[in-house]
Picture (cartoon, rainbow, N blue to C red):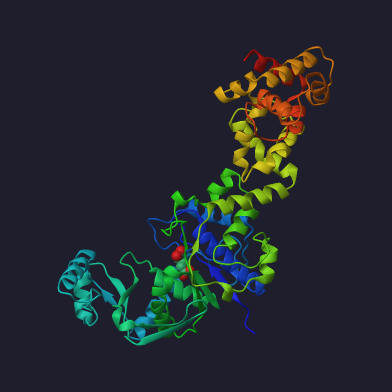
Length: 477
Ligand code: GLU
């Protein structure tokens, strides 16, 4: 049995976002499920737009999600190099092969000429594909154009045959390649095009399954023609339906979809993001949406991906984010919380961190978070005395509320109780107020809000002294 070999082939023209992270994740799950190899290949032939910063960012973000690779630019491997910009000699050899077979030719048409002819064809109701003008130039004509200083691209001669692709997700698709003009395989700057490099690399890297977004379906017949012309076996293709925004439009920031780096910076846990992304177009378990990557590996099959597009659902992401925060090791959350609390000034840079206090705070509010960036808001009550708004003031002006606060204030002032919580029974006894009517005024006095974490959690973290201050100040109105 051939070993499954799959690849994720990002173009480093931007950071990893939900869409391409999802391609990477499903491809990786397939490799791991099949005990095959997962290869990372950097497709950086667009010299203008590719940046090293993005290569580093993509690698960092994949690792953060828990995706590792067996071969790739930094780890090496038997089929390297794994950056297309370092494989130019290999592409050159393959172009020479196509020239030798009579399947490639130089094209001297400039972008302006091509555009003008495209326009004319469209106006005349003709197919705007390349008209094959340079297909049959004689060696003399080629030399003459070169001597004139014209730069040349290289085009592949499209045979016009019908190509059938048996896609794992989309099943059999047939393409009439006579509709495709002879396409460019080497740009006039000498760089291979995506179509050419991807085929040469998938062949030489012995990729068995090409898993990628449905946007590449229309590229596939071009690739099949190139595989065949170069004499290579075809891989299997599996195109994944897109993920759209909740409104059915192209997924973007306004749907709450961010780059993976931004989710990390917001303090989402990586296992939550990976779990959520794996649900986009796949529902492995009927009973729950929560599963680890290891569990995903044990049940994933690329055949399970459907043709229907998935919708990005920010509320679901936050629900899953919250689940993992509730499950996470508390010390790990404390480490993640500290930078956020430092940024807001709740932790002073020149002070030793009171870790025990931060731990108690994180524990008190974690059930209210979907990502750690929310900690600063949720923890405000522990660092800032509340400013009562009109509703708060009105609630405390009520007769029972005044009695409760007066009793609490007295007890705390007289030092007759060890803590606010210890005083609650005595306040009830003295005032005859109980239940919500007793707790809510105390909560508003301490936090300014009538909702939030339990009083039993808040008061000990604030300490008796701070509770006293806040109760007295609330009494003063
Ligand atoms: N570099 C291409 C992209 O990012 C890869 C497409 C493919 O997987 O063939 O879209």
